[in-house]
Length: 90
Image (cartoon, rainbow, N blue to C red; front, side, top):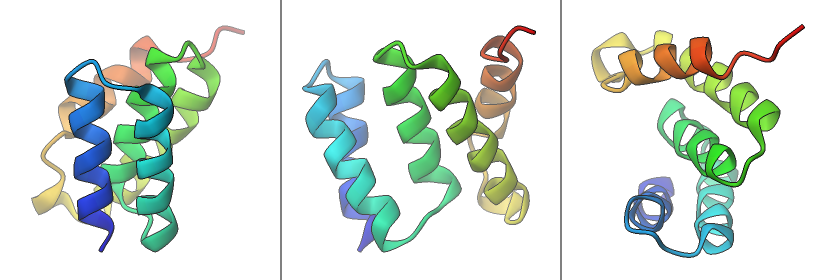
């Protein structure tokens, strides 16, 4: 299911892998089921690619989805920190 593709994307993100490949994996994961976790991974990939506005949108979605399942939202602090740091100016 979606977790396998999220994990593949996360591995590439965390280990200096091909970000375009990581994006393909995470997009496949989101296509199967959009979760806070895969949207958070996508946000981080986008940020590494320098796409801050898109990254912020996916971090927002990750927070919205994560807040609906607070017991499993184990990156809540990191997501909330990113939302402050990545907030678009203006």
